Length: 320
Image (cartoon, rainbow, N blue to C red; front, side):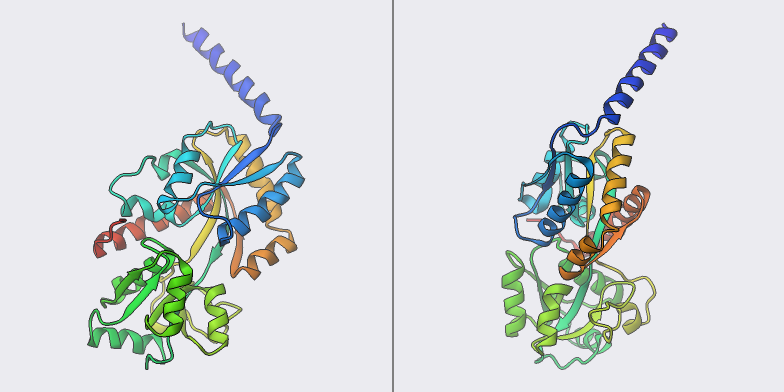
């Protein structure tokens, strides 16, 4: 009986290896769990074009938006683990388990990380009517008048929202978050002065900072942005050493996808990230090309899941 089991395992391994060596032999879908036209879409389509050229089969981007990216992520989590249905998603994979009372899938066990593609810096900005000239002064203003400073974001659980909550958590201040239905209305109200403070993605913030319509106080990354070299990091501004909250995007597959298929997808995506034209697309959209190993991406997700869960629970944030 044990011999039959062993022979069966060997046979199955042989079939899987043969199947994997022929991958891909039909079109591959990359699911973007957001509407067309956003940053995730730009990056996913650029990556798909390069992987299609390299692997000799169509890589087709499909959109399944809704429920803070949970609809599209759940679709991939429940897809066949054969490498033909992939997910291009971001930081919501780390924050949604704490934001939602119940998810239809488990991001930690139902998805297999392949590679981190890009990260997106947030800029802490103020409207010119706000007197704070530095992040330290803004924090002091918030301490002097708890809850009176408003900031907006594209929605609950967005990187801008979480950056504000992390700053409040680390400094002990209280600021009021106002969720919007998308980036455009939140940005419009910030530029108009209705919202005094913003935690804004770099490509959006940059145009208004350069026009003098917003003032940049700090970036939420570990290092300064080349596009805003005179703007300090939060760590520099407040004397911290580990403050970081960037948006990020990466490629994932259903759990139990054969390891050699994961390795092949990782290899081709990593090669794409060495293409100067692809790096320029990411840079133009305000991001930074990342790459690295599958283990690096897995560690990033786990690290953000742990620290964001702490912040979300401490602030009592719940998705609506």
